[in-house]
Image (cartoon, rainbow, N blue to C red; front, side, top):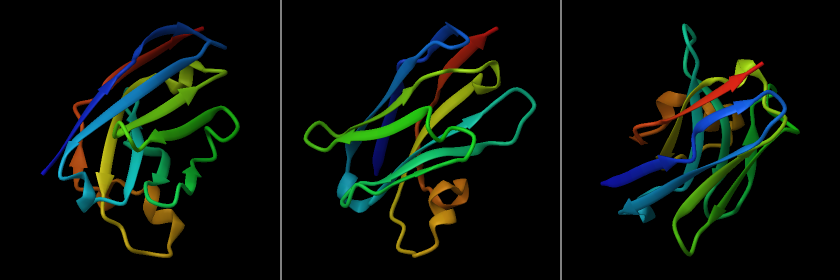
Length: 128
């Protein structure tokens, strides 16, 4: 099993920044991709950013490209999401996820059903 714990959420004004963290523990060697998803009020869950944990390739949703940066500290088993230029529409519960994905289909890396392990989420509120 893999356990994931998110932290770093909070309230911020539009234009501000936040950094989310996801600490992974357990049998993390079973997985090769980690990702951030979010679910805003009345919205479907959507993939925000993903990283191939062994190669470092990153993937982003169009809505966050240029504003969010996903990174990882493999020595500490921590994944980060640096969020800048935040907008009210970024308000959501943010979830960390991990999975073993073996595919050339880049769209799969931001598809929630591809992920087996999930954290409990951390809330981000962006006020205008």
